Image (cartoon, rainbow over all chains, first blue to last red):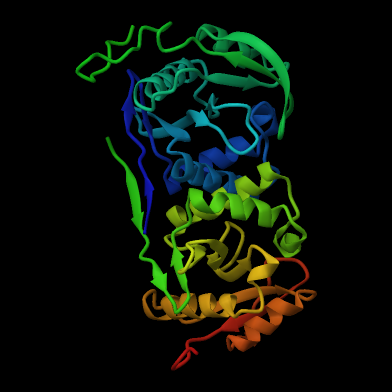
Length: 189
Length: 176
């Protein structure tokens, strides 16, 4: 029996999106344990809980075939955030999420990474729609969702986060992402 | 395109197959963790919390290279539990752990059969010199099984879980 993770490595102008590696834990842990940064994502109260989230994400990849990528800043190779597709038990439907680590803000990382992860989910995984769940008051995330072309659809109660706003992303067709007949993806606009 | 894959050879016993945990075990593990049977596993817990916990067991394999196997009955391929070394961030060492998902699987020696196979694997294939089990003072059944497996109270080890004692398993010449 083989426990398999198939995690592609994706590239954008400034970023590499790759599978999580053990060394990603420290910067992720710093983010998860900092309520000022992670309140909209889900703050973990201690290292053991942060490590468990890290392990859960890897399990998510193994169980679902997708999860959160680590985003690496190309120039330096440093982990600068995470983005990916998330659909644990109890979620209304798969969502695309993003997080930027301390010191990497203001570079457009979340937009660049989330755009690439969304394209991957549409072109390579065959998703036909995606959502983003945003805690009310997380204005920066709402602004990014809108910049990604997503619109507010409804409020609902998330099993972990409580009241959340569900944003709906443009479909693959809306984004002109239908695969060519030869299977190769369209050029990305 | 890169990917990670971890080959986990299945371990066979008379009646069981111990295999890498996967999506097929999600249902049984969610019902176990949602039940009173999971009292010594942080349960009972809601399905979302249970899924996160189970998923972290799967992820632990990738991070540590070892973890809990799922136990399937050879005859029916049914998942009946999990067994193997549990090693979250804050444990000083891996902890041999086991569970049966439903009461109807108890009293048949399945847990003992699985644990013996896992322990043999840890001591021979992995070359571990010993492995601890943290056993809740109120978990009489687990204490009994640990002792039947040959584990001895280890007063020098510190349990990383509240209200638990450390029992330590050692290699034996022949594991029954």
